[in-house]
Image (cartoon, one colour):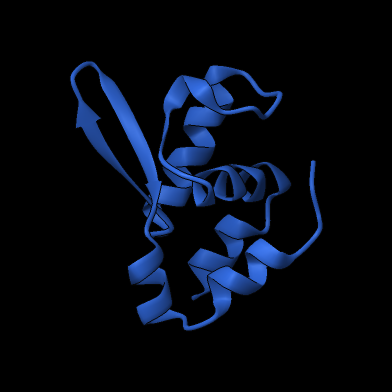
Length: 88
């Protein structure tokens, strides 16, 4: 759980998770005001923590929120985080 909380403690990663809660996104389509390299880094941290997953779609990599796994492992945590108001 500490790895998940650490990943979600960063405001940029939290904003990425909020965007993914609305639906899957390709790497270059996030609305956060960060460079592509920085977004890739944040996605990597979130993937390593098990919060998001990635699948290939042709040349694109599609990112998605691992809702079912998060709910199974940490019931209610994702919903509580998504309801929080802290934003970039």
